[in-house]
Image (cartoon, rainbow, N blue to C red; front, side, top):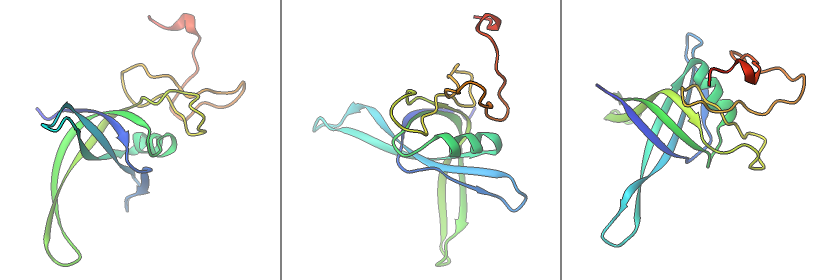
Length: 147
């Protein structure tokens, strides 16, 4: 089984691009604090590269920004490539299956989003009356919710 769950903050704005076949891909990195301090009492931080594909890539590119807190669920992938100098390079990435946007709404930023493509029950971004919902989402009444 290959499953990773990470909660951290974006270290840079996400980069969205399309493959040659037109599939959208979004790349970003997150900083994750370790649970325990080192012997000097300092918190250690690990940095992870995240890759999201298709509709999830579109949502991440639209609603995430540097400093935002996210939960990423996905799988580790190792790959190698040849660098510009001809040397073989190796990289490890998390291929995101789900991304939950954890930064609260109303933090003063226009890009504040509170939803992701996940089963965590995140909120949709606030919509003004009559404003269209993002693609793939439908508006339902509270009394239609199963919980």
